[in-house]
Length: 315
Image (tube, rainbow, N blue to C red; front, side, top):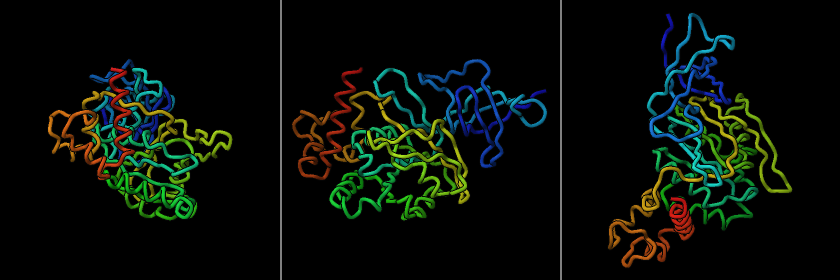
């Protein structure tokens, strides 16, 4: 008779998976039998890293020759999902059931694209994932990029987001980041070249992640992580490493809902003359007034307008 159990997906490589019964770290292989469909989901991967799955296995520990069989996926507490860069209808779940998303960025080389960063932040807001911005390579930017650094803090701390300044090279801020990850499941995400893998190695040298280099010709990072994978931290907690992301489209959000996921705009909108308000052309709009006054950054408002126009175009 087969036993039915629950474990967490810690690695996904196509049709094969590695599971562990967290918080224990005892990996074993698993496969899907048949096709699992999640209610209301159009994602390309119905089973994602971080998912808690019901599996069956025969007597003894599962092996490569006799892997466990995933039968179903337990209800998710949250997840991070993205649409492909070409705005097709296909979407991909990056990770599920995470305590927080560490969004790694750099001021330059590669330059942080604020609309891209804002898309990730909005997605975190939509799907109830707590985001933290991790500004890496701070040793390179503090002196020569002082004005840009101050502006970045003004924009995102003003919106209500926490920022951790770190340097994987010098170790600055690494202990603060390690403490923030302790006893939590943390998703690490960012564009290629921001030093995400180096930062994870700085957090815990025992974690076996690949480290790549920046392409001088294109000022972009080479993909070093090819699969989504969870690792245990010796200091406590787990991290999920992801491939560098080049495109990030919003999923399952209507244009009129987008403003709800900009925290600073949501707060200001309580004083708008009209409800609902698109914060574009209406008289008496408190959000537009806050932008003019500088209490809401023009950069964030510009990102919102871009998402709004895009959402209307692809409805």
